[in-house]
Image 1: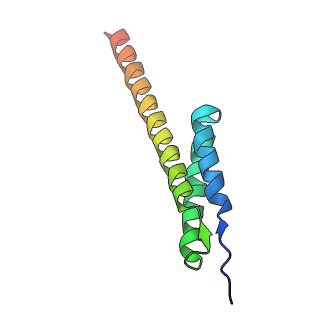
Image 2: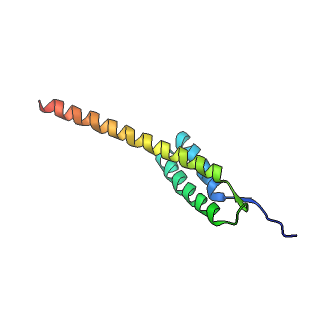
Length: 93
């Protein structure tokens, strides 16, 4: 019989790890790596033979953690820029 060996995608595991690290230790770099590795892993899983590579859930979790962290960083920067702009305008008048 031909047995199908199921393996877990390495980039999927790395995406999840960096997604968690983005919230704990590596604020921006971890989020970028989680997003990149998550997309790499999902592409690898889609191209593989059905049922031979698992880890799509881990890759998706890494993507969600990474994108959420990046969105909050951008929101924070926008708020800081708005406050900074308001302070500059207030000093002009």
